[in-house]
Each structure stands twice: as C-alpha cells, then as structure tokens.
Image 1 (cartoon, chains in turn red, green):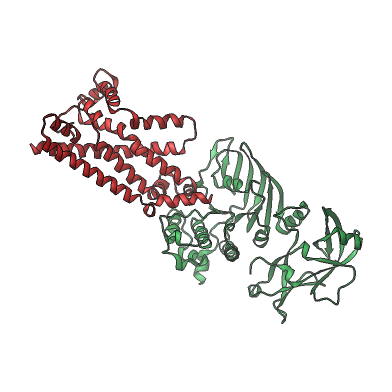
Image 2: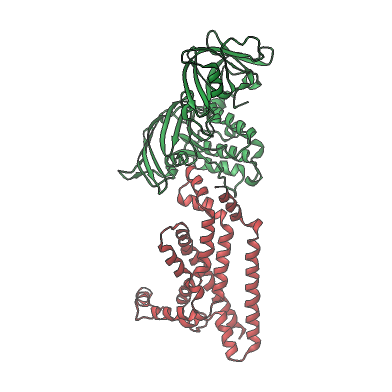
Length: 234
Length: 376
C-alpha cells in the first residue's frame, strides 16, 4: 500500500523536474524578450504569461483536455507522431504543468534581466564577447540567485498542482497519479492516517524549499543587488 | 626591460590612421549631425556641454547607437553604412570604451575582469603583466570590485579595455567621478599608455583643463553639431571668444620648451621666444621633460603701460594689442607677443582708465603661480 504512495512521489518528482527543465529552457528566452521589449504588445504577452496566477486551474485543465483529445489538432498531431493518446498521459501532465507554472519562472527572470540593464552587456560586447558568450559570462553569473528562485518556485508550484492534473491526467498509477491526487484519494477513502502522512510531507517539503529560496535571496547573497546599485550611477 | 618594451610597442598598427564620420542621429528631443574626417593620432579631445552629443558620438563609433543614418569608417574598415545596411556589431569593431562608471563585472575579481578581455582577444600581443604594471594594479589583482575606490575602478576599466587590444580607445568622461588626486594620476597614466602602445584615443570631457593637458587635437560639439576642430591650443583660443560660459575659462594655452628646470629659486624657465621667457613654479614632475603644457587664465594677467620693473611679479612680457572685444562688463584683449597670442581680460573700468587701442604696445604681467599645469 505504501508502495503506491512511493510511486506517486516518484511520478511527482519526475514531472516537476522535467517541467522545471523545460520551463528554464523556454522561460529564459521569453523572460529576456519581455525584459528588452519596448512595444505595446508587451502588456498582452505579460498578461498571457501571468494568466495561470489568477485563472482557476480547472479552467486551464478543461481547455487543455479538449486540446489534447484526439479530435483536436494538438492531440491528433501528437497521436500521429507518437502513436499514443496525449490526454491522460505523463506527457500531458508535463505540458499542463509547463503552462501552469510558467509565470513562476518567467516573472523572477524578467525582473532580474530588467534590473541588470544593458550597461554591463555593452561593456562585454566592447571586449569582444558575442551575445551567447555575454549571456553565459555576464547575465547568468549575475542573475544566478534569480535563476535558483525561478527554478525552485517552478518546481514547488508544479509539485503542488492539483486541478490541471485532475482534468487532463486522471489518476493512472505510475503515469499520472501524483502526490496531490494520491492525497485526495486517501481522503475520499477515509484513510486519514495516510492522508496525514502525505499532507505533512508535502507541507514540510514545500516549507523547506521556500525557506531555502528566501535564504538564497538575502540581500548580501544576491549579486543582482550590486547590479542594481550600478544602475543608480547612470 | 628591453624585451618588454618591444612587446608593448605598436599594438595598434598605423593602418587606422583616419576616422571618417558622416552620420545623423534623430531623437525626439535631440539631433546629432556630424560630418568629419578625423586623423587618429595621439589623444583627440571631444569637448562640449552635457547633451551636446559627445557621448552619443562615442556610442555611435563603438556600435552601441543603432538608430543612426550615414557612414562611419575606421581606417580601411567600414563600421556602419546605413544605405547598404552594413552594421558591424560592437564585438567585431575592435574599439574599446572606458565608461564614466567603470562598468566592471562585480562577479569577477580584478584579475578576472582583466582576463575576461584577454580571453576574448584575438591577437594577444600585449602581455598581461605589462599592462598590470602600466596601470599599477599589481597589489589589487585579488580584490573584489566593490572593495576598490573610484580611481582604482577606473584603472581596472582602463587596463581591461587596453587588454582587448583595440584599434581605437574611446574614453567617455572617465575622470568625472574622481577626486583631483585620482584625476591627475589617471591622466598621466593615459598619456603614458598612449605613448607606450601608440594607441589612438578619443577622449570626451567637459573639462578643458584636462583636455588641454593630454590632447593634441580638440573637437568641440554644441547641440549635436561640430563647432570647432583643430589643434588643441588653436581651438582653446577660439573658445575664448565664446562669451560667458561656466565650462570655458578664457585662457592662453601653451606648449613651450623647458629652458631650465629650477633656476635655483624654485622656478622653472620656459622659453617663449628668443627674447622672452616665462617663469613658473617648479615641480619635480617637470624634471625629465623637455616640453611643457601650461595655461594662464585670462583673468590672471594684468596690463601695464610701462615696464613693471619694481614688482614682485616675475613674468612681464611685451606685446601689442591685436584685438579688443567687449563681453558684458569685461574686456577681452588679444595680445601678440612676437608670434604667440595671449588672452587677457580686464574690467571695462580699467579699459576706460587706460583707453587701450588696437596695435598699442603694452606689458603683460602675471605671477609664476598663475602659469598652471594640470598634471603634477
């Protein structure tokens, strides 16, 4: 019996880890683009990115469920390419999580990039560093704390996801049955002892993760603070 | 030492002997239009008020100003040609820029900042240790950036820019945030580096005193346009006629050979011409120089109609009035002493009393301490 909870834990960690990696890969350029953008479309894109913060997860889940079903284009394409149904699969809950946790990764990164400004990048360019070089040698080291924050928030928020997964993932052990769903199951089955165990583990785990983020963001440890001071000089 | 001298010399080949600029930049509140062929030799000063376009011009040359029309060519290399859609990225231009606010990388040590440039430099003709010695950074290499004073930060920025081995070095008011002591130190360093490496520099400043000491040619910008361009003393003298301006101190700007360092009474003698000398207070910095740059503020010189023999004032020169111009309640006199022009301001009251006229013979007098040098 405990075995099934352990399996849910593994599924949860796999989902959250994969989601975080994907979010960093697509969230970083998106955040960069938004930080440097001056056109009026910026507010529209920012609103879309922030939407999961205010929308009930079930709304997002409902539209995703429709999109992922074989009758509609995304689901149909997926089935043609992979031969498997997208809805109620591990891939579906990862995709759902990416959309659901997007603002938690994009917003801290965007803020960090905005604070960093262009001055150091210009200095880097004049020393012969190209754009990719500048990103890895200047931007990344100076916004490291924000990257850790973004990754941790994205990870933690994905672990705590419930509504979207319930809509598009269902409850398939080893595939889409994650901790929050397992907890819901135990409560429905009046197995409060196991529900308590899961609930307290999630609570403590999330608490520790958040404490770690805030510790990392203490002013003296955050290099982006010095980047901030630099901007004041200008 | 001999070896190192050879390694240091001529990083920038003489190939980039000219900078051709023909650009216009339009912002809502500001317009810059410049058409200029600038021979790159020594240090060229760029002077102007804030918002005169000095920094924008440097940014355009460096490739940081993207919204420009026209053409910039450095030596044989076309940097921008907006008609053909050519735009060389800043990282490919081999132009260095030292900013007003050093812009050092806080996540790296002093040495880390220097190595950042070395790693990305294609030629590596310069020896890191030599540049560290030139900029006197040996004792600071392991320091973090936030531990450095403003002057030290600018020295690191200067060293870092040099280590990228640019063909042209741009300096955007690098001294404006520094105290006087750091200013003179860095100015001397810049002069030394310019000579050692034969690296042409464009030096933006709103301090004529600084520019007077280090530049060979001077470009004056006002409201986005070229007002004057030419040899340093000539341009500074032309600025005397600009009227009242908080940045312009009317002055006589000179480069004179040193005739005698310390005449035994703490004065150094400069030779103005075959007949006349100028005395100034000695400084040990003059000792090994043959030529000295100095300036005398127009307000520090007075006029006498007879030779002031019985005076403690050591400098008196004989000349004839070339021009008299009235600027508000002051009178600016241009006086020829042999072939050298001197500029003197006197009050309208004195002018009335002496009733000076053009071509009149007069004596100029000024104290040894009125002959100023910026670098001590």
